[in-house]
Image (tube, rainbow over the protein chains, first blue to last red):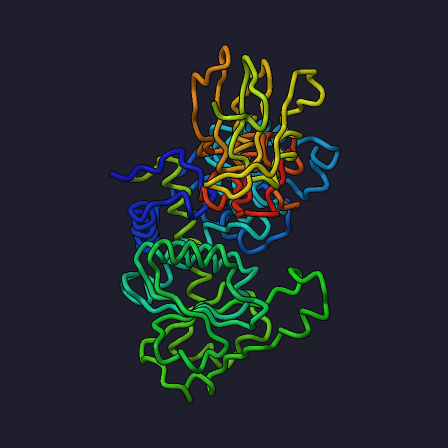
Length: 308
Length: 149
């Protein structure tokens, strides 16, 4: 029997296949029913030490839709940490004001430290290039809704596979099911070797490619990502790889993709996906963004022990 | 009787089967130069297992677990011999624990463990060759990336 009460949500690595499916089932329930009083009297503190609009608004909306309250600070510069206070101290103080904390931090591992320090649940809303587990849950939920199952799919990953934390976390999660994976990227943005070795050790079949066209007909799902300019120390390197791939309606229709092929993207997009794709039956990325609400509702309710 | 290339000690610890190149690294982490104990060091001794090996004999020294963990990282093939009255009373290979606490620096400058006053925590994901995953930032390090604190 899965029970996630008081569990921290820090990394997708911390979740078993049973726990993942439990959350996805609960998200489905949250999408189909409303529970306006489920978290009445509970307080969520959102601590965003790095700017984010969507993840933060999505958490706040999810909490409010379940009847809970949200507190947060105006900006990181206004906190005691800007005066040199440690994260450990700051988090201990905020623990006294809330029932659950959602934390985004530019330092990798900050949410893990927070979770080790306090006893109320901590949800990682992104720590540098490391993890963004709630994004992974909503990616899985979107695939499940679009395909009906996560078992045995052929999933392509396109774009920034080197720095893209959403890709790393999603491959880790999908390896549970297991799925066959196709990694398509510019040679300088390949999947990190340690990630590939881990997939191999877990028995996942995967292959690496330069061209999307050569594997498009084999895919059930494509997970496309933006090449993130901010991850490149050298602007010349960024210029070399940006615009390597550009998906459009014309391109996809010209390829022999499967009729129920679906494209996901964690958004925002830049020029890797043309607007013309939006109207095709392949695009599910706006549904994916919308899935943030039921998935985050499920996570809040599960770790606060409000629903089984 | 076999002629010893490095003289025997009466009581203490012998660290044997050190990969020869790592002998002085092992000596330096044990702080033996500051403790004033009798230390005998041998290098490039022939070894059936390693080809060339190093050996360190320290009179009156009992290694701490932290020191053993550090040796296991630098010289994974090393064996420890506890000597009492010129006899080896205990002999065991060094081995890494599941987690190293406060032993290795995380190589990721963006890791929280390099910014807060907390001990580092590295999980041992593979013993040969050693591969460690940071408990905090989850980055994997091996080889040259592994830096002792």
